[in-house]
Length: 84
Image (cartoon, rainbow, N blue to C red; front, side, top):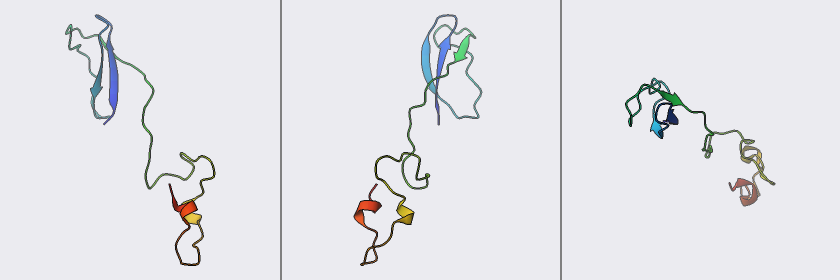
């Protein structure tokens, strides 16, 4: 679930709320109880890791596409290309 930031226009209280994307935005301030909350726009702080993401997503240096790595003579992919 995403973490949303809110600020009250009445008392300027700021807080974060963990909500589903389908949930309605909050309107009532938990401090002053006014209906003056505003959802803030903020930078995201996550990174997608693991299997299933495109090879170019966080590619750096000499990393190669593991799916295209050629097996060595023992039938295994070389450790230089198979390591993450």
